[in-house]
Image (tube, rainbow, N blue to C red; front, side):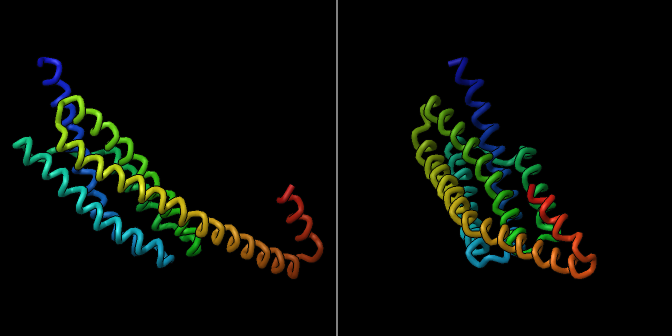
Length: 193
């Protein structure tokens, strides 16, 4: 039983970390939704915000069964990921490139959470907390589904981003060739090589 005491404390600390991470996301997701130009991406962020609120409630439910408080820990990992996402949203990217950047930031969040919940589930199993396992597995499944939706959305948005970039580059090269003469096509050829 002595060994479980240490693991149980680790489990509680990790749950507190996840609770704080989810609360940070509750604040970050509306900003990400606002920065998205794709309706589908914006709706995806809004839907995940609702799920994230449920994730918070599930962790609160786990803490009620432990007769403990979920508060008291700052998830520095999520804080860093959220700060990077905030930086992305202030860049001066064209719309589809911004959406691609937001998806990239969101997938970092999802992968971080998938790792955290996978670990929490294993700890809960070892500690015999089967009710916790069920709640945590629900959340893990939703995080994986969100990641998959982002991957699917990225296929279209990334294509739009590259098409838009190529179109911008083409119009920029035409403008350059009108101003400089025959030198602009050489630069274009060099860049492609």
